[in-house]
Image 1 (cartoon, helix red, strand yellow):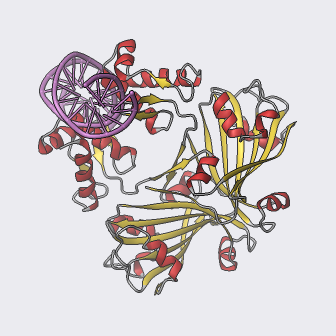
Image 2 (cartoon, rainbow over the protein chains, first blue to last red):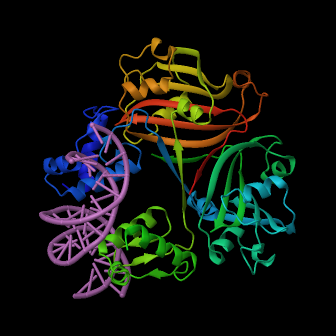
Image 3 (cartoon, rainbow over the protein chains, first blue to last red):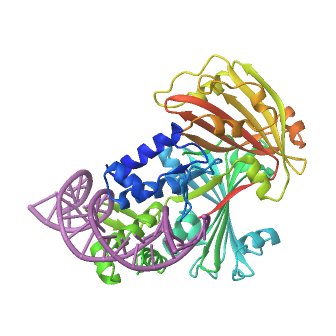
Length: 232
Length: 232
DNA sequence: AAGTGGTCTAGACCACCTT
DNA sequence: AGGTGGTCTAGACCACTTT
């Protein structure tokens, strides 16, 4: 049996309650013997299940079925134009504004909200752009970029292509944070998205850093009704 | 070098643009020789990077650094009471209503929106409950449950504990879908959450099925300002 | 102290895909 | 046709954690 087979069988037993919530699973050696495969194969299968949150593993203590599984939603966050294209729409991009500005304290706080973060520059690039699908507003991108992290960045960078694509192509990045929330559409946002003022919008906030250096903070306000989904 | 070391070094080279976007990475055998480890170790490291979306792997074509990486946000969706407790608040649960009802067509459509799905029962349990943290509204749970999938379910099941906990304890489940969106608080919801009517709320919709059988559809409306976040 | 998962190795075969 | 990643094996040693 290959590791997918082992995974499927163990998952079946979990769902059939042969391995009930709170209960233990046989150790790797026993399962390997039962399935007639190497322990490494069982290890691979159980590692995948643990990664998916279906089992919990601890050395010596063994492997258990969690009573209250922490579900994980793995959301794919594609490049916006690819996201639009994947829905069968023609992607469009319109730059609304791009300027060096002093960020408000809240923005700066979020951007530098990392252990051991370097301070960002005093003035940051503030880029606002609208992404459209077949001409209709899709998502409003409100982005702050730390010029210290991306030398060679200028207004011309945002004219034709998304700042995100420029950054991906020209800047290194490592890690950051993604958060989902809901906001009431401000008047200016509502105008650009073509929706009613105060309409509820799904907002995705993403920070990116390169080592200790803040690179960019982007807030995406999706047109009303938009959902971000995944299987699990 | 162990697999974490290989992963770290390859990631460093990607971020240092030694392996530029769109470029190729040496094959596993070469990397193994360079790092002085077994190919399986390199394979493990590269598999993890591929899982994180940082590289793309194809047989024969080799391994490449994607030009437009599809970021993955791995969101942990814990049991609500654990979520509340993790924030240092005292979890509370108040059942608002529980009854067998005919679902509206939209609800039924979402519940059965699976390839090869069985139809759900004509009447479904409709459970509305409010979760609180230190007495303050935290999230409103609006749930539909297919009685065919959960024999032995009754009003007493929801009195003291969350329907979600009951289901986890008594029903098998396999897979489903999670979606994030934003909604305007209906009057009844606003009253329960103690917010203004039409306030923007983050809403999480989750469907669960057991094989081809729809089990439950739950809509969580979070109190205003709530965010769901993750590192990546 | 002992059991369990975590990882590494060296080799092997295979499936897949590009050329 | 041939190169590349995907996987399996049998064995080994180690790290961690509970007893």
